[in-house]
Image (cartoon, rainbow, N blue to C red; front, side):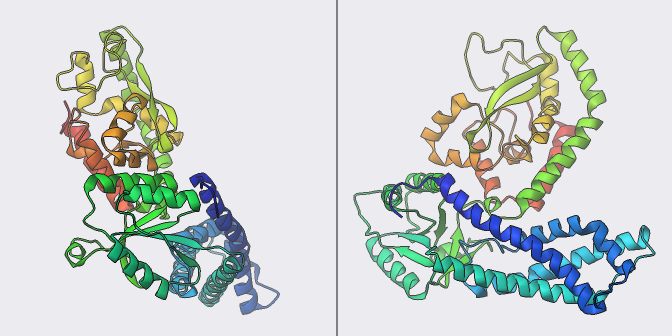
Length: 458
């Protein structure tokens, strides 16, 4: 465990374990469906009962994988005992089988009336699937323990709180959890203590017992955690507990508030991507007539290209080319160099002001969404020229790059087109910490209002 730990290596190890289990799960999912039919009918399963599963087995397998992920059955960093998996295993099996049965019943009703479905077979399938989830996760935990896998947890806090909390976690921790013995040093910041611990070995989780930490030091610590792929949890006092939301987890029986964005560990990520692709394709097609008219108007008003492209930083600060309808005069930064747009910017054309007001200039970015460089909802993409400056001012700014930049976001529906850049990261960090289907749907609905009313634009 010695030496510096590269976050990508840590992630690859974790993904490797999940990938192996996923492969075995796919086999088990297929076996469970067929075993249920064989248990009910014997070796000679009637063909009319086989047809629905033969036609839709790829969809059923993908759905079961999604359910397993949604119920955290591939999480071996927070779930370290069989009891952690048991209840979720039953829930995942129930949702997977019920959802698949509803799909097949709908298809049978409208398209395959000659086929048959057995509720008894579905019940047997549910039992087999739940037993598989429980047994496979129990075996995986045993195998991980035998191979020396440990989730390494670092406790940060004052000397008194650090010692008491570390001892309590050790006394009640599962055997796969290792509490790192790091003596607090008043001369070092918590971020420095974390860097020292990383120099010795991997750190998977951090419990922060000091809720009175200065904001600047907390920002530096969170930024360091994001770079090292370490999850950080806050142990709230009684006064902090009254403002904590329901997104609470426990380690060794302690109620902890996770401070890492939920989107990084939730099953909503793949769903968000499916929504991105579907909506961007539809809007690109439906928007073609308007785009053609806008292109003619831009060409007629001023010299220069119709589309404006610029390098932006995407997820993990990976560069890509962003596309927009040109709203400024050509070569707008030829004399000034890279600068942020401001209220009453003289470089914006008359047509450009209208395009910005109704967000029409953003339409070409649907292509970026389709390519996977952006999402429909997320922090607005930033120019590389400004990133280091913003991070130096506030290390938490780097957290924006944990997710894909978005076509729209909280800053776009609540702020103005020319809002001070210092305010926009606040919106972005709030969104990143609360990404969900409901949040995205609300932002998209509010964006439609902005498009038709021009609210907040300049």
